[in-house]
Image (cartoon, rainbow, N blue to C red; front, side):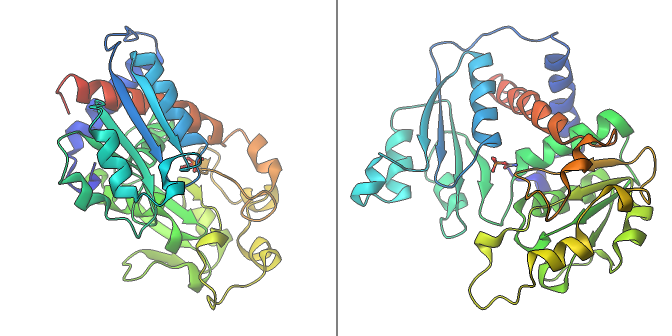
Amino acid sequence: MDLKSLPFQQIQTIFSEAQKIKSNKNSTISFSGETIALLFFEASTRTRLSFETAAFRLGLGPLLLDGGVKSSLEKGESIEDSILNVAAMHPRFLVVRCGDSFDLSGLAKKIQIPLINAGWGVKGHPTQALLDIFTMQESLGDLSGKKILFVGDIRHSRVAASHFELADVLKTQMAVCCPPEFLPENNKLKIFENLNEALAWADVVMTLRCQFERHQSGFKIFSAQDYRKNYGLNQTRLQKLHAKALIMHPGPINHGIELESEVLQDSRCRVLEQVSNGVYVRQATLRLMLEGKL
Ligand code: CP
């Protein structure tokens, strides 16, 4: 799924279906006997289990390849061969998480089965961006003109990359606050150097994980303590944030680095609501695709 080419109306169709599922108005199982392949070549908790829950609720049997452990990848089989072989078992969907080095869009052109990006390196994580937007809309209504602030490792965040694709469609304003090393390349975003000023501006603050595993050797990085001091969210800093603003994080969280655990108790925090909504949005997306409406 490419968010740049997903029209506003289709996004709202997904959200309307997700809302119906959330309020138990569209929970019929209708696709039993069919399968969905969940092929995760990089670690995941939320996305994998969220797709698995959505699949169970739709009656789709999940075929799970989790991190490639105990699979023929251990015998040297390539990711492409693995996916092509699973595709030959004719699941209704292939849901794939993989690193940047794998050509996921090239593979999608070789198969007839719908392929859903469940997090592709730093390139994008479309269903995460959709569930985030759904969560924002639930509290804030129409997002047109709303101010969304990203704080954290934006350069290495596939979640931020997908949100930046959605900004034109949704007409949201986007800003970032992070160390220069974490700024994305070629960005035309509003940049805040001071976190307190950024928080005072925002309707939503989306905190992002410092992705230490993606920092190549030689990458100029400061200590986690420096980061926490200048960019970490805590209750004192959150006094700058509007009373009706939202605090979000796609997870997983580095507690005590990008935010203090106390932040999760703030009434403006939607972190676990994001996870719950992830199931509804993914279930809605799969259902609409199965019904030929997406
Ligand atoms: N938000 C997210 O993608 O989390 P996981 O890596 O646990 O799937």
